[in-house]
Length: 362
Image (cartoon, rainbow, N blue to C red; front, top):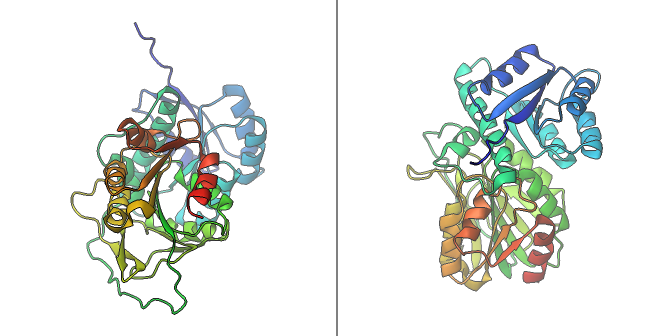
């Protein structure tokens, strides 16, 4: 008989008693998770971490005595533990600072003036903790759209107009096109990846990262500062030249087209059949229509199977498929299903993907 796996131990850290209770109650009906302790500041959290050795920590950033940043620095130096940031939209810059310090992912605190948001936040947090639980026992493949519904929020009812822009006179077409998809754990992985890219890479990049819409612009700005690639949140219609990158905005899909040798990003509303938004499959599939052997698809950490259909389209078009290995992936769901389907040309830890991309796109 197979021995039952012990519940995942969670430490909840937040200076608000209401928020601590709200987060802890979200796990009450989840037998795979046990909240072992709650802390009101970073110092108490450190003491409880060494006492209980939690498997996952949920962390607020603004706290008295010891804030979340100081806690993260000490934690990662002394007892590295997966940390999920729980923060408000207004603190999105701080969220990405925390990811750079070692947090694996984040969820947004609900607006308690709109309590209908609370179930989505709880669901998202539970899914991320369960995905981290599965990390030690093999690929995590979430069924259906639930793994990103809470991340993306409700689908809007109207689409913004995407007005094509004239290419700049100095537009330089990229030698290669790199399309990247990621979900849980993806923000920190992408920040690391873009820090090792160099101008030796003569590629353009496009990214579909499962992320709430109010965070994607700030995320693009953080990526832009990590290296020589110019990174923007896609607005729709802009050109994509060598050494440039587009990030799909939240609650939307990004597709690519090539017109008279010029690459453009097209921002579209999600369609009824889209199980994940932003959709990695839509980004990959659109690029496969014209990319051919000059197309590289990269599937990074994430739960679910978004990217599987797109990776198949890339392979059929003659492109290269790279997936992050289980060694470094926070969740081996998305890369795992592509690998299992036999579509991956390379299965590599994150630290090797950047150098390979530079080598393949010189």
